[in-house]
Amino acid sequence: MGTKVSTEQELRRTGYMVVAAAFLALFCLFGFRSTFSVLLGPMRESTGWTTAQTSLGYSLMMTVYAVTAFFSGMVVDRWGTRPAYWTGAVFCALGFLLTSRVQSYYAYLAVYALFAGVGTGMLWVSSTVSVRKWYVGQTYATMWGIAFAGAPLAQVVLSQIVKNVLKTTDWRAAMVYLAAVVFVALVIAGFLARRNPADYGGKPFGLGKSDAAAAARNQRLWTIKEAFSTFPIWGAIIAFLSSMLAEFLIWSQIVSFWTIDAGYDANMATNLYVAIGLAGIVTMPVMGIVADKLVSRVGDEIRARKNMLIFAPAMGILACLLLMGSGRAMALAVISCILFAIYWAIEPGGVAGYVGAVYGNKSMGKIWGLGTLIVMGIGPAVGSFMGGFLYDISGSYMNSILFALGSYVVSAVAALILPMAAEREQAVQEVPDIG
Image (cartoon, rainbow, N blue to C red; front, side, top):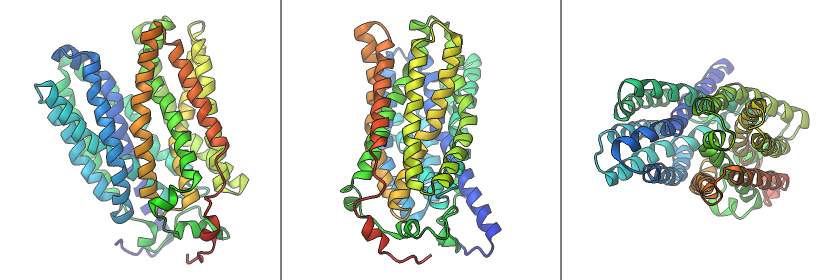
């Protein structure tokens, strides 16, 4: 249990610590994704493995990540985020450190998939749920945007650090450096992590005093079976999964598209990819503020989160359209980077916000954990595979971009039909407001 906080100011400081911890966790989580793309070539050249063989380690890691994410949600609901972050610190560090020492291919697959998968799997649900449990209504998206800025910052900073390290040494040494970075960052995140507001004598920030329905939802305890027998969670999963198919296809293939289809040199294509991260550092907090202002204007958090989930893939659709014409004008490529960053700033946190608004915070860890298992167990692998497969059969990445565009369309349609409440809403409203 936490220590009771006597003042509003102390409670606010505690909430800021939760956001700072989530920022560090997301920095480390997305650091794995961004640095692997940089390390892939040197690993392949040093070991003699093919690109497909080397990439398989990342794919298996994402599978273990998805399974672990489900269990991390249960950990957060019961014990808070500190155990998740500290477990992540050990496993993430070992994921880099032990991989740097492997000599055989199968040892690489086993070590990287297991340790990096468990380590990163402890970070996503724990960070999203912890921020959601402290901030709801008109405050959630802003604070989540600040925390999520750790993701593009990792894409920019860690990728550049690894590139510079590789100029003087090899990928094994780079992984040792990364092991130290993630271990220190996640240990600090664990110290900063806090339990739920109620454990400190407070309530989530942003919960309006007159919002009895939202207060009741936050007190309801859902079982997995109950939640997954209602449509909102499945609608959210479909919206998130289809956007993840598009997102991971874009992230994995966009540099190749720019070099092969658009005709840019490798350096320019890489700089444009980094530009998405640079834009994301700005769009994460800015779009969070926009989303919360929409909550205030609409007066209904569920409706506002739903509207943002329609807007996000719409930005993805427009970005894909501009991307296909970027070979004729560099400006289109730059604008597409900004639009992808806007999409990225909204979608992942927006889905978690919608789920939290519908089902409340008390059971969100296990509900969102299972949702993450489904989405991340399918989306990253299938999206990345389809990008390469469509190129292999056509000789162009244009069809891959069209596939991503279609996936964004499905995401927007799924968001459009998201309901404003679970079917059991009446039962939720009958729970007294004990806050």
